[in-house]
Length: 110
Image (cartoon, rainbow, N blue to C red; front, side):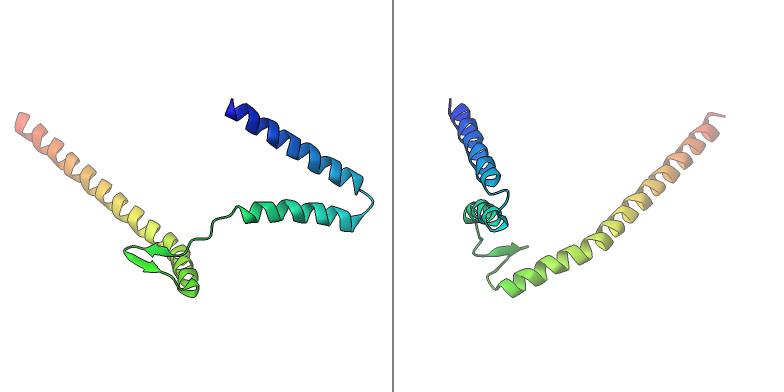
């Protein structure tokens, strides 16, 4: 029941904004006003965090937050590559160990 009402509200909103844009199709300023009203509603629903957590440290200073995000995205590629390389190396070592075990078992069977 709630989902139906929500769907109906969204459909009505879409129809309303479609009509508003259609009514202003020859008025650029009017179209921008309609778009601005849509954007303003979306951004007013956004939640701004008061702090971020980096591992175990709470960061309140936005400059530190920005630097933390920058650090994360700059370093994520090399970290993933290193992790993948270590996993690949372990897989190769396991294959070699298994191969040696098979050879030893074959030798003992003969």
